[in-house]
Amino acid sequence: MSRINAHFQVDHGDFNLDIKLSLPGQGVSALFGPSGSGKTSCLRAMAGLEKLPNSYFSIADEVWQDSEKDIFVPPYQREIGYVFQEASLFKHLNVRDNLNFGRQRIAPNKRNVDIDHICDILSLNALLDRPPASLSGGERQRVAIARALLTSPKLLLMDEPLSALDHSLKSEILPYLENLQQALSIPMIYVSHSPDEVARLADHIAIIDKGRLLKSGALAQVMLDAEVGTRFYDGRSSMLFAKVNAHQPEDYLTELAIDNLRLSVPQIDKPVNSKLRCRINAKDVSLCLTPAQYSSIGNVLAGIVINIEASDTLGERIICIKISAHQTLLAQITYASTKRLNLRQGSPIWAQIKSVVIL
Ligand SMILES: Nc1ncnc2c1ncn2[C@@H]1O[C@H](COP(=O)(O)OP(=O)(O)OP(=O)(O)O)[C@@H](O)[C@H]1O
Image 1 (cartoon, rainbow, N blue to C red):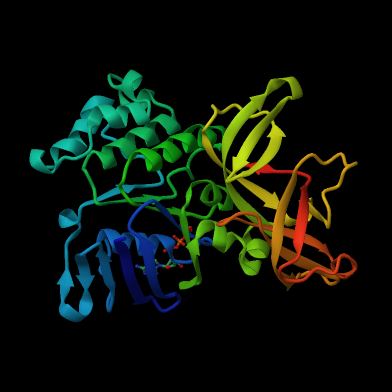
Image 2: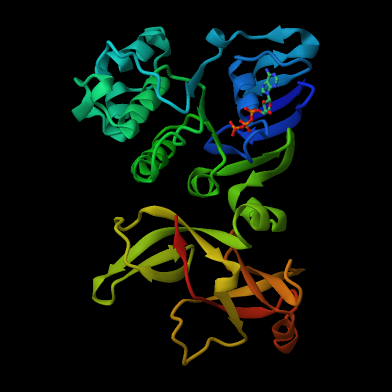
């Protein structure tokens, strides 16, 4: 698989950036970290909007910057779509003409993104004749994303595209971003300081702090990390990838499939087979050596203990449980319970799940 490789360095005196990244050449990679950590600096360097010294950037087999070899491809020659925090549409053009502006910048033989397809994915058809001033913030941002995609970019860079929107507009636009990544094969780099947005959208995550790379890897794996959990996610939790298996309206439940396992959650409004992600707080998981017969907790997953870690809380342990070939569940229980259940690597275990957050 092709990769996106970067090494950005700059010394601004007060702020020193030195970040090496190796990101997959497909899916959504999040650059995540606190304000002022250097995320936008990296994104601008990728776009060539800033020429950082002693730096390197390549995508697949194209090198866009290599300071050692004196290579620096200017921004207008990089096939990049850039979406900013605030959509900057041309006020005097309607939505259709704004979209065509992006498309017409590209030679017809290089256009590989279909305008009708993009308008369908982002539900823009009803907006095409409207001027930007008549659009909501979320609609404007959808048009800005479509315009960037219609330049048929090799890479889509998004700098906190939802940060200027209020909570309800964010929830309105997030499903569109999910659909985009499923429908298009353009890799996206998504800058955010929102842990929830990242958990919902990213496949890969690079965490940046004070100009340095703190962690990088597949989202579910990085979420299991102790420092990431305690610092960014309000405690240890696991991320599971699921799909809607069936609705059980008589019980007000929806059954999710996590590989071969089944989990029931309060009814959700998504069609059968929709993919979704859920987060399970380690404190919401209790463990039994046999499947409990008389329990109010209906969600019980079988697994194998693969690791036992100390927890930040004295007297507690984090139990890592393999529940399928690629998915791991964390449980936070007391040290006393770990001893009482005689848990060790390889122990078969039943995990009772009290609550699931659907992302
Ligand atoms: N040209 C520059 N000269 C001096 N300092 C700079 C320059 N560009 C960026 N910085 C500093 O680099 C630091 C990182 O900025 P950057 O915008 O990359 O962070 P960020 O993680 O994207 O933050 P935010 O989430 O708030 O946008 C900041 O302290 C900023 O002031």
